[in-house]
Length: 157
Image (cartoon, rainbow, N blue to C red; front, side, top):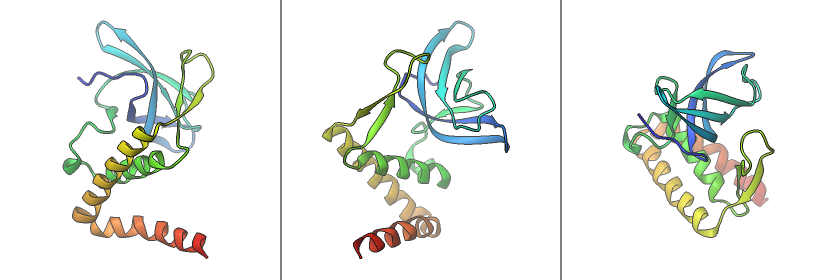
């Protein structure tokens, strides 16, 4: 079973107030506690429509929680590749921040700016995901990249 730590990015199945069972990508692990019979209990920052609340405590069961980078890039689904590419691109940008909970899940979250080196690592990962999309999922890549290019051209005008 995967061992998690605070700050890990996971995908998680959850119950939505509006849409039933949903899959959320790029959810940060806030805190981890060792649990004897199940190995770990995680507290996760959840989407606003989560029926359990925006901080959800759950066992780290592989049927509904997975680390976003668990699978090798060449075996990831197109949805996972797109989510990872989007996230790494966002984190590579200047002034990018990550949410942290330095005093635990019961205290307020704090934003911490990424270092130049961390942003460089995210840029490298983003390139890997984009290459994988372009090579093996050209139609989905085109659907993903076209709005981004159009947005950049509109900003340049």
